Image 1 (cartoon, helix red, strand yellow):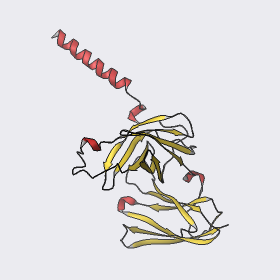
Image 2 (cartoon, rainbow, N blue to C red):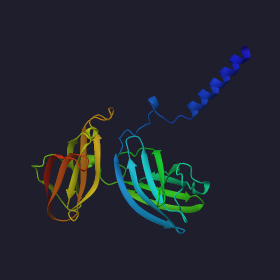
Image 3 (cartoon, helix red, strand yellow):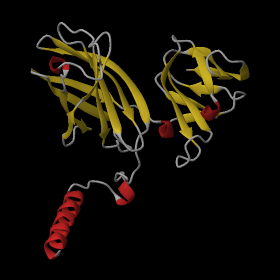
Image 4 (cartoon, rainbow, N blue to C red):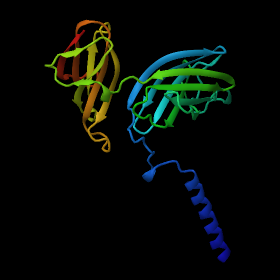
Length: 265
C-alpha cells in the first residue's frame, strides 16, 4: 500500500512539473498581451514569391486580439487533390516551416504549418502566433522551407494605419473631407447575430477599401451588437459617394440605406 502511495505521488509530481515547465500563458490560461494593446485587422496581401521554381503566395494575415495568423497558398508539382483530404497520402504532407519579425526586430519561430487541401493546391496556415502590438508598422514573414524545397520565400507586409489612427465618420449628413493618400473610416451600428450586416459600394477609381471590420460592444459577450467599420484610402482628387445598405444576408430586404459624400483634395 505504501509503495502504491509513493508511486502515485511520484506520477503526480512529474505531471505537475511538466505542466508548470511548459506553461507560456498568463493567469487564467490567457496569453500575456502587450501593455500598449494589440492590432486587430485583416490584411489582404496576395503577393507571390518564386524560389527554386516553387511559387508560394502569401494570401492574407489576420491580426486578432489573442493571436496572429498567416495564410499561404502553394501548388506543388504534379499536385492532385487527395480522395480523402482528411487522410492524405504521405507524399502530400508537405509542411512549411516559417519565422517572422516585427519592425525588423528579433526573429520568432512560427513553426510548421497546418494544411488544407483544395482543388488547385494547398493552403498553409500558421495559427496562434503572438498578437501584434500597436505601433507595429511592418511584418516580415519568411517561409524557410517547404517540404524538401529550401527557401527562403520572404514577404514584407505593411500594417498601415489602424482604425484608432484615422478619422471616423458616423453621420451621412456630414461631408467627408480628405486628401489623396489619406485614410478614413465609416462606422455603423450593426448586429450580425441577427444575420444583418452593412454592405458598401464605391468608385474604385476614387477610393480603395482597405478593410472591413467588426467590433462588438462587449468582447466578453459573443453575439452582442457592435460597430461595423469600412476603412478607405483616397486615390484621386474630386468628389465621390459611398453607398451603404443594411440588410439580412446578400439577398434579403434592405432595412436601411445611407449615402456618404466624399470630397478629396
